[in-house]
Amino acid sequence: MTDGTVDRAELDKFRAMAARWWDPHGPLRPLHLMNPTRIDWLLGQCRAHLTWAGGRRPLAGLEVLDVGCGGGLLAEPLTRLGATVTGIDPEPANLEVAREHARVAGLAIGYEAARVEDIAARGCRFDLVTALEVVEHVPDPAAFVRAAAATVRPGGLFVLSTLSRTLASWVAAIVAAEYLLGWVPRGTHDWGRFLKPSELAAHLRAAGLRPVGLTGLAYEPAYERFTTCRDPGVNYMIAAVRDAVGGSA
Image 1 (cartoon, one colour):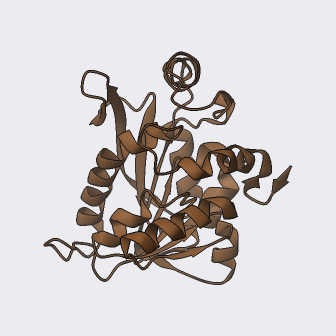
Image 2 (image 1 turned 90 degrees about the vertical axis):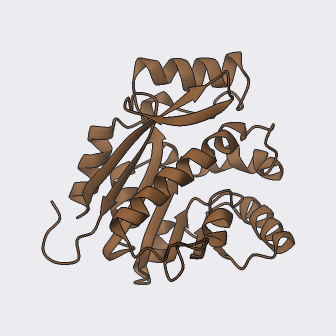
Image 3 (image 1 turned 60 degrees about the vertical axis):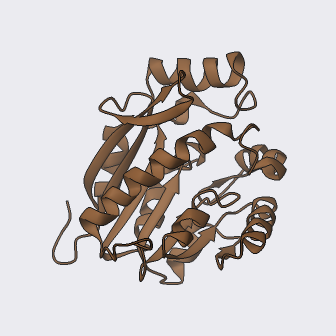
């Protein structure tokens, strides 16, 4: 069953894991391993395309929308880096975890149970919009990108991370991560919903944004970490801007 850009069956998967969002050895372990590299690359894009305050709080003055925020794995570090963050997720169980973790950490983050199209319909606009490991779980990626893009201010930035639909991603994200390593529960991913970078870039352009950055993410088992790489054939990140003046295609 779907509700706009939300697939209720997908929400059920994450509701079952909600209590373990912040367990680095739990079912969301891949996100914990990716997070330092994802944030580092995201900050590089912010520095290149947004106002950069520098210092220990380089995102000061920026308003951020974290779409599909889950338990707050991205929202919290962005807040510590100075941003004013709104995190949205259609699954209330995720937000309960996110709010409690932020409360204990002493962080002021605005969490809301909402779909991105709800935020867009209100006319809310942000300097930075993020959707990390989200688009592969939605029923209509074009509609999702269009709604999220509508929340990006002129001159603003949209950053996504996801998986490419390749044989390599099927082996790594499904065979290895779900069946061999047991990193995530079986059935977490649907390979048919993975988007190649060219497909996601086309959705971004159709939504009025201009792709400006792309990187692959590669797992290094010897160090149990992810690093950026040239090959976006498994995990990748893409950034796009809404130009302040004129068209963006």
